[in-house]
Image (tube, rainbow, N blue to C red; front, side, top):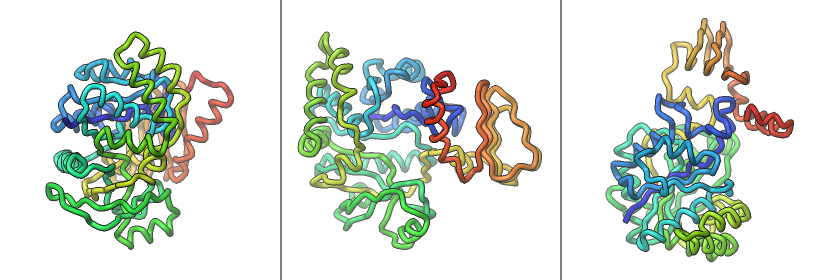
Amino acid sequence: MLHAVIMAGGSGTRFWPASRHHRPKQLLGLASDKPLLRVTVDRILPLVPAERLWIVTTASTAEATRALLEDIAPNHILAEPTGRDTAACAAYAARVLLHHDPDAICLLLPADHVIADEERFRSAMAAGAAAVRKNGGLLTFGIKPTHPETGFGYLRLGERSFVQDQWAVHNLSRFVEKPDRETAEAYLADGNYLWNSGMFAWRATDLLAEVRRQLPILFDGIGAIGDALETPSEDEVLEEIYPHLPRTSVDFGIMEAARQCWTVPVDFDWSDVGSWPALADILASDDRGTVVRGRTVDLDSENSILVGDGVLVAAIGVSDLVVVATPDAVLVVPRDDAQRVKEVVDIIRERGWADVL
């Protein structure tokens, strides 16, 4: 049967000061009045029922996640003792799925994407799941680029192999790291590069077979955790083993050297909401290109993002700024430098100011 696993363990540091350790990005209503995780769940529910929906989050946010998703069984919200990147998350989820369903097909989806055409999204997900059910292998979904984006990784398309439910399925040639501007422009002109969406489909058995072949230490650790599922020692074994699992991504730890990789190019409007300026792509702005949220007064600002969360923000004639105010912290950064917010979070952590993390 088809299952969906939603990865909701990210910290969302680029959305500080709104995003915090106990309330990360996926629990914020950045794109609407609903938290991103709730929107992601609602988007997939017409395709995958709640009883086959799983959330992987961290122990620090598990309680808040269960409170937000009352329609998801509490034991379907899996709490990692600590984050170990997406390969461990994917392998852990696959092992849990096999415990409940030996024939499990898995969609692995991030919790923080914004997708406008939800019906087309579900059509692509269903096609990807059907493709791996019939043909095996590991499959990722690539977004057809609309501009030379330097903030995303890319996928290099291989030859077209077959069509599944009106969606072309290609061999995946390779993963490519985030490019500089010139390279991103060349990728766009080439036409054979896609944005790496971070969305995947596979049989749970196929994913674990690749983990066993490529990451045997991860496989052994996940195997021990799997053996303890629904036993009195489950929590103890998870706490003991999980923090020591290898830290690597699905992309480069598993898929890059997998024996069979597919990709489905998709063309629906998509954003991974990676930083504050991304809100300008998904929220309505005024005639000067400024996005205003919360308790905010704006007079003649241009191309800015202004957010007042508890504390009022008043801006007069500013340009190309991100200003975010919360009850205990204020961020002011040029729009083009907004990716550096993570550096600020690192410095705050080094200085021991945990009260604002």
